[in-house]
Image (cartoon, rainbow, N blue to C red; front, side, top):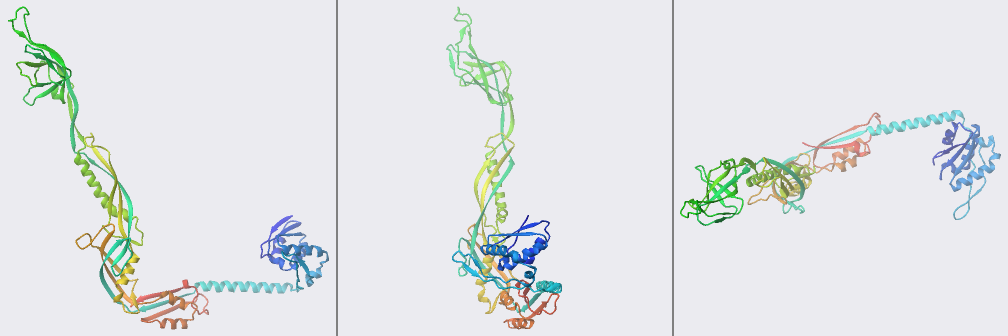
Length: 510
């Protein structure tokens, strides 16, 4: 058995069309609550009777309370239904329908279905088709209708210049010539790299061994770090002892002859060059002076040639490099700040040029002063803020400031309007910052009659051409007007469309 779920507005004809093409011997019709089929039991009997002609067994199901009563009544009396009943109609008796409060009786009218015949059905079908066609034709034509009213007005040029203060977080005030402004903020992060200019010598210190001679008759102690100097024309070279030493006193060559010549006492000591450089690599047997001692008392000599001394000049970070890089990067960020702020400005807003303020959030150098490197890099993170105002607020303020120059019944044109703004900058008489700025505004426009275009359009809707022209002719302070209508493809419809979107009002100055 096939199951069909009906819609609430499916009538007898609709249901018969649905079950007429079923390839089955039975059908279960699920009827929704409130279905039009429950308006009369006759609807159910007709469906049942005609279903038999298709060879179908019909079973009705529903949740509708009244519908279930009708279904039960139909099934009880279905065996008495004949062909005559179908053609002539049914005489219905009172049936009791349960209600949530009481049982009430619904008297169903006696209905009769006339035998209309094939011709009547054809005529009815044709009339329906013609009616629908006319409906869609008229509807299509209505959408193609248009009406245009062009109103020509007299005009007078007006040019004025006024100084206005844009102030953040303050309402506009025409009396004080103050325009409400807003602070906008964004962040700018930028890095820059430069060549360093500092230099320093790097390398290794020469090392070797020396002998210290004591020519006195008393032994002498020398601490590590004692300076031994190699005297030369291009500059002395200092070496430092690396150990504490005690140099023995001088002794006679012949211990048994106190009058024999004295032999200086001596001791070996490791030495290291005071500075780096290859010039400290000196040959052995070179004489060294002991700093602070007379040469006649103490003297040194290179025991083993000093070796390993070398040096080279490398680039390093200087303090001036850091200062220069910071200043250059700050300048670039400042120059970029206006572009960065403009990305945050809406189309309805205007940025006050030069009002930007840059605040440093963080900066980081990749090297410190004295570091061995060819390049120095700096990254800065900043917050940029600037002052903006709404263009519409400026227009309203100008209208308020210039209304004394507009005659009664006229207004400033909003279509041919040229507004030039010049930022005055910081001076003794003006201010320019991210919170406040003085601007010079010049307005060039026309004074035209006050025309309420929307009101005129509403007055024209649905009017005849004669009525429309009368309405347009009654507008004050205009020079002339033109009115045109397009009636689509049906010439007999002579009315202004009722849809405001199909009516255009054009106001032009002379």
